[in-house]
Image 1 (spheres, rainbow, N blue to C red):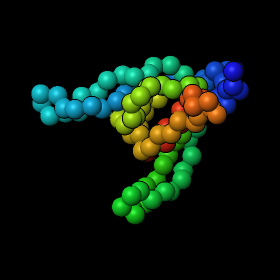
Image 2: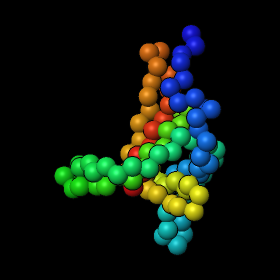
Image 3: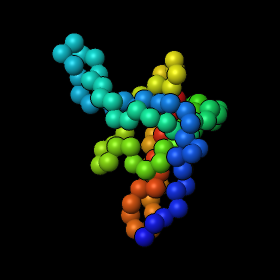
Image 4: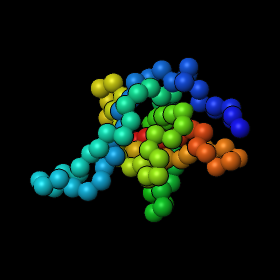
Length: 109
């Protein structure tokens, strides 16, 4: 069955690169792997949330993608939008009733 796209490609207009951090390089810096290079629906907003240790974290942006940008993997690392690099605070995948991924949301610091 075809489900409605909640984040259609026509509203994804901001170029973005998403990097996953997995392991360390020989020099001790994080090893980054590009998982997505394309367009997203990007909006900047200020919002304060509390992390698991009850510390206040100020979120500065949200990026929405159509579909699953990294199937079967947790997304942690950073994104590059224009000349700005932001850390990924959290991610979520909105699912359809049949279990397929409708959209991916990244909350950025």
